[in-house]
Image (cartoon, rainbow, N blue to C red; front, top):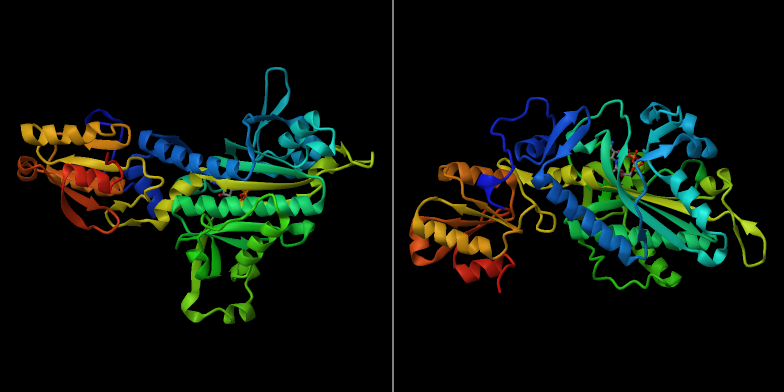
Length: 439
Ligand code: ATP
Ligand code: MG
């Protein structure tokens, strides 16, 4: 993309109403604009990040056998009356009425709808297990939308739902999803730590929140730093084998991790002091087993092998896709701006033409740009070098390819790594191969 022709409106001034750094940087870097309280429009660079995160989430869901669907944002109130949650959900639910006076709502979550869809099509235990997911906008009329996309009213969520014949099957589904989440967050370059969460009346230990350390987080967290070092992508787990899933799960839960609500001082004292991590955290995902709560309430049963009908066991599994954009920035920035992890950056690199109009600079930049115009941002604006450097740091591209008249004459490019500030000089080929675009 050529910067001179693109819609990437950066701001020099810090927006007055943005309280936290990710919100300020998302506005300043031109990723989003607010259209109403807690509701945001995604501009080209922001949308690219959202799509890259969604794609990683999708690949890891698919890898554990979940199947993608797309449910609508609007839901009939009747479904929620069947589960008993229509009145219970309260003012966070946005309720509307169509021209025929039928009650609708903008979905805050999809347990009811997926349970109904499942019930319409599955009548035998033979179809089990099933895990379905979608990546769709949700609406929750939060009392206090704040921190930009971190606590919005309209937000993008990946939500998955599992259906199993029995408790053992539901546990396996839960563990598969746990593995998918750990792999997803590892690929996203974020340290999201699974912590046991409240299960309410369901009981048991099958509810985990995935939390990223950030000073602006809403809950206090304590965990063993060894959890940050685990390579979940490299660990072979046979997702069709309950024993293999169990071994993985035991390993994961052997490390201490708890929010302040569940913190246990005695167990914490047993963690090696050099590995204790303590701070505030942001919830980016939540997985939850809830048994037959919805299938029973909504009367969705299937026939078992013995001819008796039974209510399938369910779990639900959310990832805050749009919240992750803010959470990643909270965890990865400096005074100058965003530092995008390679995996989610809107562009792999920016090309900084320090003297637009100079034939040698223009030619070299053009040559770089043509190697991957869809993955590179070319700052071809006629602005001063200082403006370009500042915008590049603000937007946080992992790499900067800097082309000045002296280098252009010699066929040399300066490569800057945004995360470390390290600058090195290279031939064109070498520079491209270092950022993964070499032939
Ligand atoms: P929170 O405790 O932050 O209000 P929640 O527990 O109500 O979240 P879930 O129902 O577990 O949220 O939703 C799954 C995921 O969706 C959360 O882990 C979070 O990442 C994201 N999410 C929830 N509410 C919002 C929101 N208002 N804005 C952005 N993302 C959200
Ligand atoms: Mg939650």
